[in-house]
Length: 559
Figure: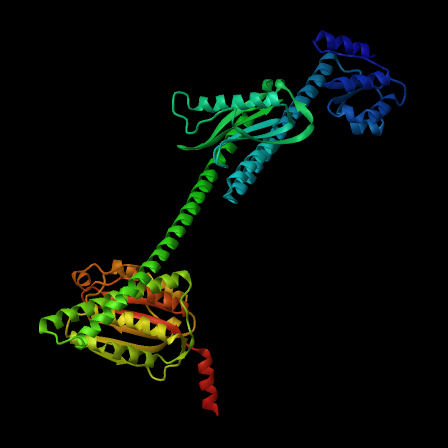
């Protein structure tokens, strides 16, 4: 009966093969794919069922049609066949059934291919996303290239990658990641090819780096060393791309694969090569910042050492000068004329000024080197204020300035180095005296405040935010020249002075406020200022309350 269908298929350009031998049928199905399998139900009982059972794995890719004129069909066949054709069908109906099943198989195959392409595309997208995450997680240039090569392997399954890097070491390096071992002759050919590819990128232009294939350093990684590539490698499909961002060139990469690359493969390859360029740029900038910081640290250390040495060298002769001036002014070497006394007094005043500058330089050097000694103990701030006022009263009288103290009531003690607090307050009060015109007033105020109640200019907000708990706050308020708002934050910079004719006249080292700030930092305190140009300034500092002292006072009051 099958012969009837054979003639019909041949007449309509269908290729048909016929067999009734189970072994031959199995060999035919394993050798090639058939679009449709026609099973003749006239075969001996159980033949079709046994064929479907035994050859089910190799028949799944084909459409199975059953030719039958029987009313009952075994359940096993019904589970496996796509359709059945009654033997009384006309030729047109039979051809129609064949065409429908061929189109259905074609549609299913197309759908399967689409799903396969979609799955491959999703896998590439996931790979690209994963690589992007890895790129964002490191600033190590060698690791970035490793991530790039790993991503290429996952997305494209390469046979060999040749990555020429100019950013991972002090010299150009060729990084080879190979599926199999590479002979010395093939390695030399790959090096030569890499150099030519690199030079071709800058054809007619000056290449950013000189490259010589004979001295090019190679780092090689082989996945399966037992096998070896030969020169047929150059017959593989390949892709090449530079690793660059704008004018910043970091290298290039070439990839080989025995199978052909698709358009999607090429797009994925270019994307990965471009993705790695930006993090390489960031890593390079980061490395430059680190190197610059190291240089700055060395320069800062040299500067501090230089200041310390010079200051010590100046202090010795200056001490002799001051002692000599004191002896001359005392009259022990003879009587002085009025003019001589005047000039010697001027020399003594300037020697004292120079001594102050040298002491400031030594202090800032000690603080920055972490060699400043502190002796903490409970201190009453009123004692410090009175001492500093008394010490500078003569300087204030010279300018007819009134120094007023406004003390808070029952202020608790602070845990501090009294000598360093005196130094801080002396700096603030001497500045107020220097920058306040004659005949005006300077007020020193002390009070107890909680950190939440402390207010300051917006440029010192970060300083105030760090404070927690209760503080003794000391303010030195003057009626002097003031500070412009845009210069407030720089008031505590080293060697900074207010740009004003008066500031140039009084001079100074510009280190008093920076020293005060660092001394207060060592006390876990803070310093800030409020000012209005030509109306005066208020420099304030806060010291944490000595909690231990407060607890003692509570115990005493209970008893």
